Image (cartoon, rainbow, N blue to C red; front, top):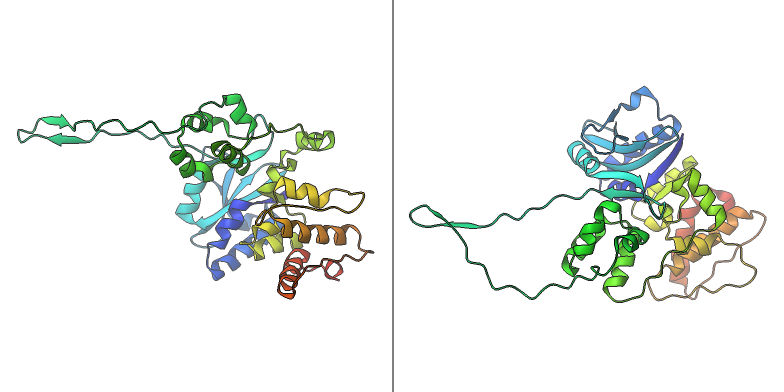
Length: 321
């Protein structure tokens, strides 16, 4: 059974105390060795809409939420008992019907406005007088069709609420959307043209048919941890999301076979340094007989790069060398 890890798991792990993290790591390694071991005390989350969510006992109060199938076990979330179960009850793992990417979809809650009532002295109810109507709020996505929103990666059940949302509402719920959908909608809101997603290359498309976790957008939030060393890296640095999860545009630069020199350009904060570190480690792993030079213009930044290389290399002395 393949073990995968989600960015929601590493984020929730980072919020625990150091002692709690140690307990979680021990249980996680046990899952990687044998997820069917009876000592793990795995129980289905009965109130979850997704019937494949299970809880794994870590301690008296800590629980890991996993998504289990015959072929894969996905580490989704970890927290104290009630919070962990509540998280699972509000989520569903599904493959997007248009893009094909796997998404952790947060289920929408129905919100109803209750009119405020003021009572006369006699006790008869009287609705408060209506305030003058405010200027209509801008709805930046009203012109987008449901088909367009689906192409951007918006989950099916969020399409109608996104279409009707004003700017304030969008910024309030954007974090609940998958990253690719949130990024595309933000560009629409600020007037930046959004390109229609292109068809995936045939080799990637064929892999996705058998394993949707291979989709580039899936890999920005889910990662297969094939070895204990990879799992160790993900668990030891829960705050360093860059070490485990990559944007599809970053991964394309890192793993592509280039025919000559390449320059990656971008403004500050776009992840150029992350691409450089991952590329160096990728080459060192792919070609252990070669030497890789990662250089920069200052000693403090060189020390930062060395530290990040150590994180990615993990326990592999060959890669470090």
